[in-house]
Length: 357
Image (spheres, one colour):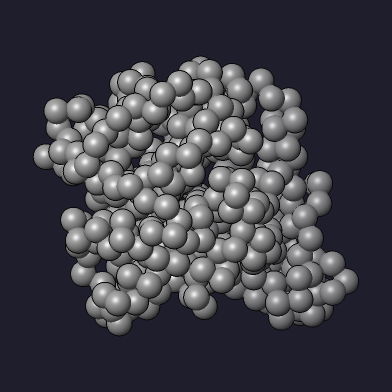
C-alpha cells in the first residue's frame, strides 16, 4: 500500500512539513547527485501561485544539505512562454535565491532518448535527469486546461527542454492522447520523491489562472499516481475520469484506487473547487495558445553575426543537427532538428537566434 502525507503548512512553517515528508519517505542522499525540480512554468511572482513557492524550494534544499553531503542541482525547463529565459525565470520567481547557489540551467545540456513512436520517435531530455541518483519533484497544486489537473506526473514534463513540449502537444492531437504523452515523458525517469506545494493552490482554467485558493497544505509521497489521486479527490474529482491516471496504472506506475492508498493526515475535498472543462477544450480551443505553440515548433536556430565559431553548439546538439566548416558558421539541418534549442541555451555568445525557416 502506498502512502501520501497531507500536512498543514504556511510558507512560514513549511520546514516542519518538509522534514516530516523526508521522515515518512526517507531518501539515501549522502554522496549522491540530487536533482530538485520545482514547477517553473514562466516568470511570475510567488503571490500569483503559478510556480512552486520559493519557501518550499528553500526548505527542501536545506533538508538535502542536512542529509548530505550531496551534489545538489536545482533546475527546470520553463514552458512555451518563458522558453529560453531559464535564468531570468528563476530570478523573477524568487527561486534563484531559494536555490542557494545550486541552480543550473538544465536546458543547455541534453541527450537524445528513444520515445514512443506513436508520438515522436525520440526526444531530447536534460542530461542531469538521467544522471541524477535521486530526483525530488516539487509540483504545484493547480488545475490545467488540457489535463484538468497538474501535479506529480505532469511536473516531469519540464524534463524536456525547448519547443519539444509544444511539438508533443501537437503530435498528440487530442486531450486524451496528450494525457498519454505526459505519462510517456514521466516514464523517461520516474522521480523518487514528490513534495507538492498546496499552501496556495490554483483553480479554474490553470496552469496560469488568476483564481487562487488558500489550501494550507503540503503533500508528499514516493508514488506520483497515488499523490495525484489524492490531489484529484481534494479537487472533488474522480481520478478514474482522467486518462493519464488509467494510462499510468496500465503501465504499472501506481494505483489511484482509494483503498490502495494510506493517507497520513486528513483527506478532505475543498468546498466548491472550480475545475476546468474535463474535455481539454480550454486549451485546444484557445487560438492564441495554439498559435503560440505552432510558432515555437516552426522556429529553427540560426547563427548570428555574434558567432565566434567556437563549435560549442555543434558539440552539444543531442541529435547531430548542427554542422560547420572551417570558415563557415554553424548550419542546422531542419529535417534533423528536434527543436530542443539546446544550442541557443548553451551558446556562450548568445549568438544562436530562432527564426522562421
